[in-house]
Amino acid sequence: MHVNKTKALAVLGVMAALSTVLTVLGTVISVNTVFFTAAAAFLTGIAVCSYGMGYGTVFFFVCLLLDFIVNPNKLHLFLYLALAGYLLLSEGSWLLLCRIVDGRKKIWLHGGFRFIIFALLYLFLLYLFPQFFVSDTLLAKPWFKIAMIPFGILVWIVYDLAYFTVRKILYEKFSRLF
Image (cartoon, rainbow, N blue to C red; front, side):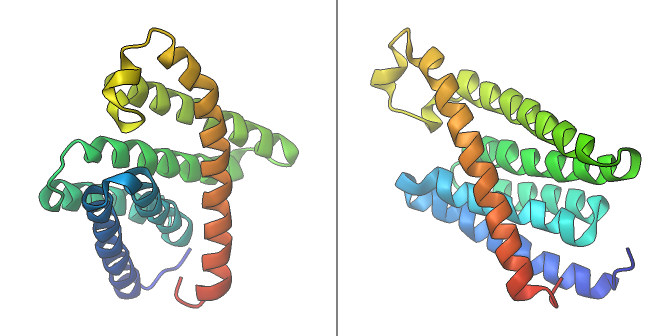
């Protein structure tokens, strides 16, 4: 993939600024923390799709650094790390599978790999930072974390569908930009 480096840096710089604004909005408007952080994370996957794994990885770490510097709530950094890290690993695994596997087997392997990545990151957030999901009163209930596992699978399906839909729309509308 031949990419004009200046154009890539300019587009990724604007995307990093937008990502930072979205994560800060997630802190300011606390009801929509997960929504805004997920929208910011979508930009990481789009960076990988548009410019490759190298640019996408640099974009991911730049956004983490900007979020750490600008965002007043440092706890939200872990949510961004999980959501954007999932998309970085997901898109990177697709690029790798395209090189080594052909046909429908590639699609099934990628789906399984995406599920494993999401499950690990979700369990990490659920057990270390459950306050992202519910209030303290529900955290005291012994059944809460077990009940959240099927909920997490449903969230993964919605998150994946939303990401692929947004990616498709962005490529249709702004294909000449990428």
